[in-house]
Amino acid sequence: MQNKNIKFIFIIFVLVFLANSSCTSQSVPSSITRSSAVDQSLPNPTQTIQVPQPIEEKTALYQTVSDIAVEITSVKRISTGLEVGICYTAPDNGEWRPLPGHLFFASSEVYPDEIEFLPDEKIADGKNTGIRCALIRYLVEDVSAITTPLMFSIIQFYAPGREMYSPCEEFEQRLSTNQKANAYEIKAKCEEVGDGNISVELVDNDKSIAKDKVSKLLADIAKGEVAGPWEFTITEIEK
Image (tube, rainbow, N blue to C red; front, side, top):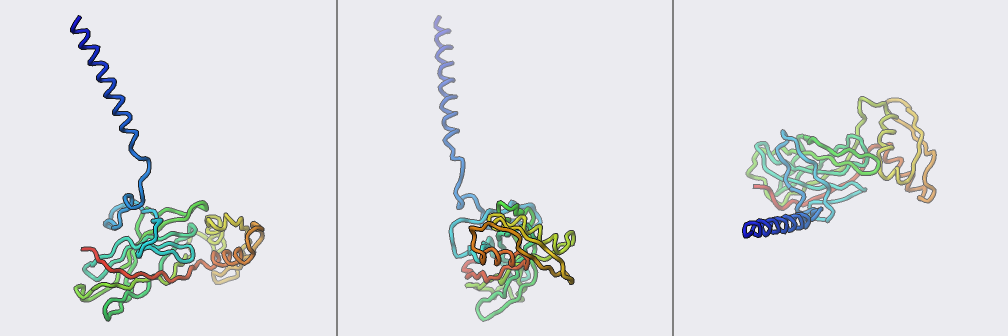
């Protein structure tokens, strides 16, 4: 009889322990803040990476101009000079590329040497903007001479035509995947006018949106360029 009581008590103890463990596992929050979710350094470009989402808070290394957000994700000395990692939002599914400005530090002015685009980009789908990341490298003969503060900028973003699409198909692709164009319910007609140029005409849109806003957006999509600048003062270089 004593053995049966011990077994019964042991079973109750196990059930109570399992119930407490279940409650504890449910107490873990389902979401985390941006500051703990994003690693501010870019991994080795030869490895597959997870593209970070743009941060929500404004910092010295994050700036939005003309609806395109740019975040500096890494700054490091390399054997040939300096490498600046950036991530930026893309307004549509075009191959949006940055046009970096000169890099200034001390009394030096350095031209950008090359850009490497990183994998695993997030493609815009008409409901959400896309995200692309890149490494911009500057050629500096004396790496030890690189000092802070560094003045870094992006002059503009542009979306060159893709070989798989005709000029009008390129426009239609980017129009259909542009979040703001879908919100404005823009419908447009495109005509090729030679030498890779196009002429677009507004057919319909949400009449509650001001006509000048609609016309400007349509012209920007057709042009495939967004002017800046995005300017940053960098005060730290990774060790």
